[in-house]
Image 1 (cartoon, rainbow, N blue to C red):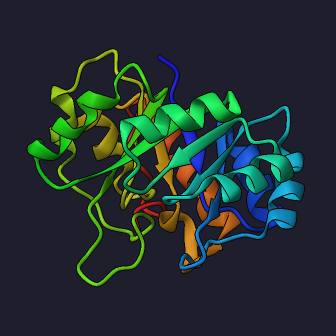
Image 2 (image 1 turned 30 degrees about the vertical axis):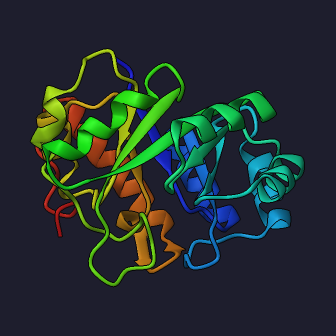
Length: 225
């Protein structure tokens, strides 16, 4: 089974190049001003162009209105839109119809009951992303570096297309893959040297850890430090 890997919150050429070198299937650009990973339209357009033909570009938004989405789609021509706010099924359907793009709907998860929220979106959203609920006081719906109980995802319909996110890094990705067996993974803060600062070396180490985990090999001591 193939594994989709999305490196999210990219802001520099070096980070994009590291993601592509590792074999990322998706690269994510965040348009949310409260996030340290927020990127301008011009920079995102340039970076998305750098990844064109090698990975799918994903524009990540939080309760964005039509004007904002119009600007994003016009500027960077993303392959996909990720809605990381409180968008309703009707809103997801509107966005899909307006832009003709695939849409990923993100959900915050703490316990099994949180997964029940997915049902109304099935057949509307093209894919899902499951992230941990943000810590108290956080302004960010994602990218907080915290995880949830990955075993919860084992109960999902095997045919559900989703990405696992939240607190992933080179040291725990083997456990995440073993417990949830997700069709895709999404990482942001776990490959950063500081909030919003992607580290190409950490990106490379993450891909090495994923490869080792999928081959059934233990991660090296260097990867788990």
